[in-house]
Image (tube, rainbow, N blue to C red; front, side, top):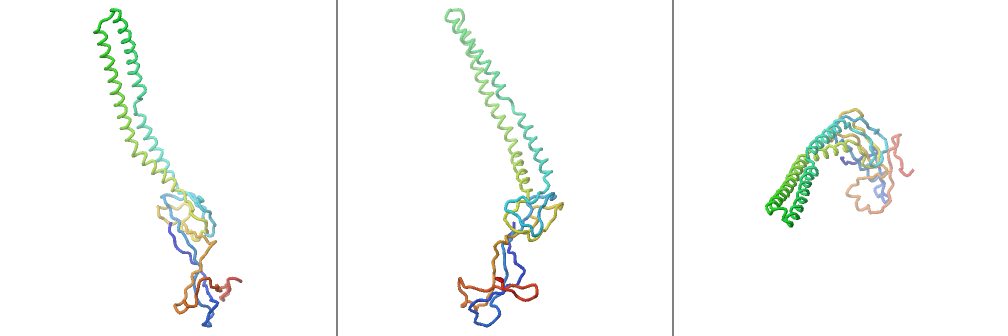
Amino acid sequence: MQRNYFLLAVTVLVAVACDQNGSDFDATGNFEADEIIISAEASGKIVQLAVEEGTELKEKAVVGLIDTTQLYLRKKQLEYSIRAIEAKQPNAMVQLASITEQIETTQREKKRIENLLKDDAATQKQLDDINAQLDLLKRQYTASQSTLTITKQSLQSETLPMQAQLEQVEDQIVKSQILNPINGTVLTLYTKQNEVVNPGKALYKIADLSTIILRAYISGSQLSQIKLGQQVEVYVDSPMGSIKNIQE
C-alpha cells in the first residue's frame, strides 16, 4: 500500500473575516484526503476483481482474487512429500512390543527356575543363564528404543524444510486475495480482471472522502491576522466559471 494525498480538483478561495486588504479572497488551496494505492501481493492472473471507479468499499472486504491454481498444486505436492517421509517411520510400538513379550516370557521362566531351584529341581547355572538372557533382552530393548527415537527424529528433520515451504505457499494463497484496507471510495482503477500482475503492481487507488481537509496557503504578511478558531468563508469554483460559497 502506498499513501498519498487526494487533491479535490477545485479552486478553493478562503476569505478571512478580518480581511483588511479589500481583496476578494485571502488564500487559495485544495481539499485533500488521505489516499492509498492498493497493490498486488501475489503474481498471476486476476480471476476476479469487483472494483470500479466511484465504488464505495468496506474495510477488510475481499474485492478480488489472483489465480491460486499453481499454488494449490504446489501445496498438494508438499503435503504428499511430507506424508511419504512420515510413512518411512518405523512402528516403534510393534518393534518394542516384540522384545517386551520376550522379556515377559523370560521373566516367567526365571520365576519357574527359581522355584525349581528351591526344591533342588534346577541348577544355579540354569538360573544364571536365564538372568543373562534377561539382561540381554533388556539391553536390546533400550538399544532399539534409542535407535527408533533417532530414526524418527532424522525423518522429522527431513520434513522441516517442506513444512516451512508449505507455510510459505499457504501465506501466498492468503495474499492472493485482494483485501481492501479501509472504508472509502475508489478513485482510480489501474488494472482489470484477467490481466496478469506481479507483486507490487498497483491495482486501484482509494480514499476516505467522508472527511476531507482544506489546505489553504497565505502570505507571510497575513500571519498576524490569522488565529486558531477564527471563522472563514470558503468559496469553490462553480460550473459557470464563477465562485460559490460552500455553505450555500
